[in-house]
Length: 368
Picture 1 (cartoon, rainbow, N blue to C red):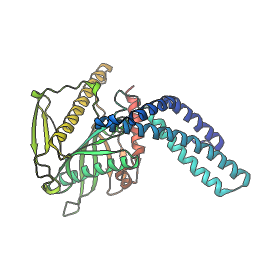
Picture 2: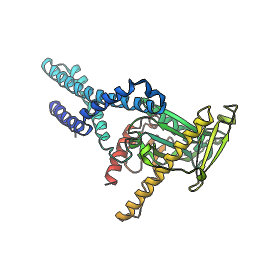
Picture 3: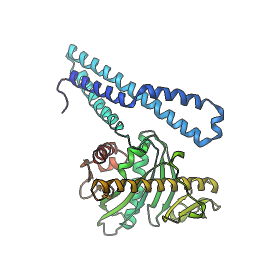
Picture 4: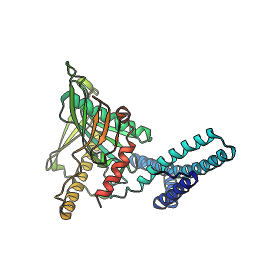
């Protein structure tokens, strides 16, 4: 419940911000920023473009986080002054403005508090996401494409770069599958609660009789592999096929066989990449995706072993996680956290922060 006295609530939010800052450790962040700026100024860094981009993303992230903390602190002070001014001038318009600012600050500080819960082994990593159309025919393929847009729109809102590695288009509409990366620190920890089956209910665009259709799409979220992970893949464990990249409707994109598909024979995992025009680059990207899938497989196996030791039978928290209903009413509801909204179209346009925050809190409680 919000404090009735604005001064009390501002004091409470200020204390919460102090607690958040103690966890995030701005001094350590500034030290890392100085080191990264020194690395970025070294011309030789660009001899390794992947490393240079990683340094640039980490530097940008830390600078934004420090600016965010400073901005929230300054806005709390400004809002306190605004309430004092409204009180002294008996100005209702100014008070209404201050109340709006305070409500926005409350929400932003709560969201930042969630960031302090991301302390898992891989939470600080960038994320790789795979979306697969499941049951529901053309509607499922269309829904899978809706989810791709939802996540990329969410990333755009937060200024997180994304890169699509592979898309397999469906014949009638939508996509069969896609794999893409969210290239921001803590993207994996932030998005891993999205892992599972998503369910859509709506009037089918592909049914001549306009009947209601239920369709499903699966979302896999994996941490990006780093050099310290020791995910070794022997050449005799993989089969590499090359093919010509294609777009919607089967149209050719490249005129050469530059797309790469890699099959990991021991596990049967298949990955492909066709976003680059070079076969060598596509192979390197596909291997990175395969390593991420193997790392996630290992992480899940370890989690299941720990769950079995705890006596819960190794039950996973994946499976069906969220329902999107567009007919006969609009509603999106997470079946685990209970978070819901009637603005389904806004959710599909990328407004999923409330769902993500609830998932992070839910996962933290259930993994203790």
